Image (cartoon, rainbow, N blue to C red; front, side, top):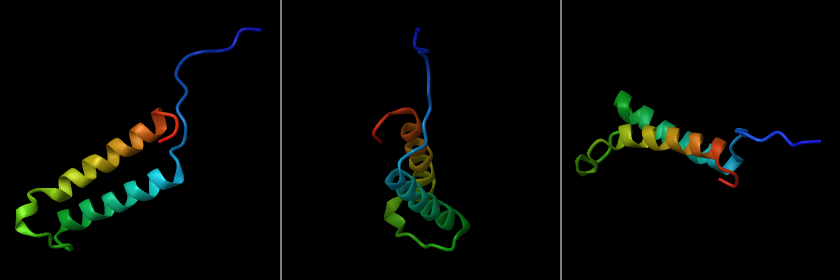
Amino acid sequence: MARRGGFRPQAPKKVTLIIAVILWLIGTLAGLGVLHLPSGTGNLGFWSLVAAGLLLILGSLLDGI
């Protein structure tokens, strides 16, 4: 019997999910003004949200992340 090939997404690992949640919290709190980051960091809140999203996408697409 032939095996079905193709694209098979998976759930991200627990460590990936924890790191993404931490980055999401930093981004959200910085965006709402609750967390005050040093002025030299630029737009760290936005980029931590972007990194959290990319980490979750990569974690569901690549095996072992």
